[in-house]
Length: 464
Image (cartoon, rainbow, N blue to C red; front, side, top):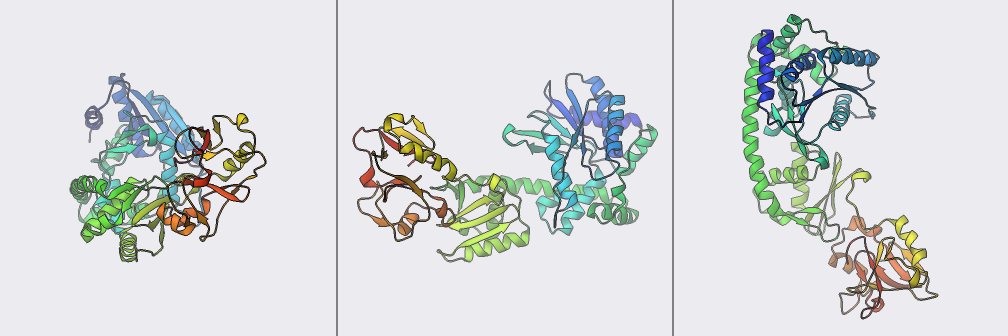
């Protein structure tokens, strides 16, 4: 492919994107031949389109002794292209059963995405042979249409709370041979990562051993495989649209944690095929990594086949799935990203000293409590009453919530208030002397409710 043709190819692609004046095009720049060619094409495009902003980002993983040299190369080349470059240094968290490839990819994207805002575009130099590698890896892993759809030329990319942006791959329909020929014609200097010759990595094994033999037998296999990926993507889009229409009817808000949960009776009413698709949709909608097909079938078997009172708890990757009261709860295994619950023991303990003071010394908001003159609320402690906070009361402990005419054992109230078993040890119980006065986030004991328009205490973790 002639130089002008490839530059025109990149320019046509970029001009077809829904860019706004002031949008930034951010290139994930490694200095390899693929990103070098795209950087060159981007620099030519930038000369004709000053209305946009441009940035190259090189991620320094620290895995190779040559990483500093590569960073210097990228700085030199970026300067020659007239494009600004940022070098991001990342530290990989490696350990047993941690894929270096996967961890490096995760950290690379985290480092690059911080430079993007909605209406910006992330450019990556994936090409046609990369697409074939991705399809073969999806086959090796036993993935369905979603995995076989591989990479799209234009895809939405989540930036978390900031919103989405676009990820674009201008070279996805260009072969490796065309890219290398273009680089040679333009005498583009690029780096060679020595790890690319290590076939212990799956992608390198395919690139070095398998794909050359496939292309020797079937020269157009990368093109035809990409066509299959596009067909899978189109079919997956139809499935995703149908899941998006059906899934909301199966979702509800958990009464205690207020998180989104899946109604299992509604799931059970679906066909076996739709059960799997809807469960995957629910897991994905909550931001968790999708399980494999085998894992998904095991999850469904345990969820659908369990008795009503059975305790079902399954951990898959970064997600733990639990069944309770006919609902499926998803929580993060990582406590930093877990669903927030009503208790913060240190915060509550700090409030105890304040509660023992005279009511005139209380602020409008005392730690997790607020002063109120309406609704169910706890009367203020009297002089001499010792305030304490306790946990894990026995199930036989008798309580009388403000919403009940008669008392009831705690083990029955757990069910009545829909408190999941795995959270019950975290619920705090407030006492005046030896009398229970409040279950935090759940109820005020009836005999300790403030009367009339008296000032009382409401727990501000969750509304009572």
